Structure formats: structure tokens, C-alpha cells
Length: 154
Image: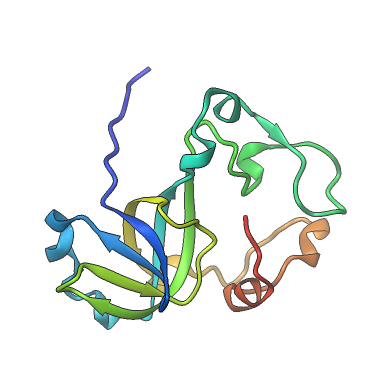
């Protein structure tokens, strides 16, 4: 099996102004143009779950009370995964290219969490108008905004 190398481009910080991404200096030029977008996808590393036991988990009990029992980890948002990569969507509150910071309205990542990539949210690529999910998943908020308001963590 091939081994891949991933290097953090920055970290999640939780400051007085709220959550933000703080980029490593070499990546500051990569911010150019991000201010034109309202939201971003943040790919981050579940660093606190990066251990052999959590990487070996293949089935989990979903957080939804009505779930029909153990589910495959690929059918969940569990932090226990073969590669502890997480995806969060957030509204951009500011872009400070000089400091290398992207302000976020909300995140479920913790302070110091390594960030591995950032992509702008684009409705033409990211929104699915007619999606399907299991009926027992119906108690979960129906949008990013509702999930953020409820303080949900994946």
C-alpha cells in the first residue's frame, strides 16, 4: 500500500474574536481571492484521534438515537477513521492576508487542530438539491446554520 505525506498548512485557533484558521507563512499568498467567497470547506486532522486504536475502528454506533445499530465508519461522521480527516464548512467572517488568518463563524474543531487544506464553498459544485439520507437521521439539523446554532459536533 502506498504511503502519503500530508503537511499541515496551518491550525485552527480559538481567540477572543472567535475561531479562525492561522496559516503557516509560506501559504499566505494562497489567500488571494478568498475574500470573494462567503463560506469555506476546512479539511482538518483529528489529531486527538490519531492513534492505532481509533484508526482501526471500522464500525461505530452513530450519534443518532434511532440508528439501527453499528454502522460502517464510512457511513458516519465519526472521528474514529482509518485516516482521521475531518471536513467542516464555515462562513468566512474576515480574511486578513497580512496575518494569514481566515475568520470563521463556527467550527467543531478544537484550538490547535492542524488544518490540511481549505477550499471555497461553491454551490455549483457543493450543493446537492435532491439528496437522500436514512429516516433515522431525520432528527439531525437540516442545514449548516441549524447545526451551528445547535452546537453540534460530528
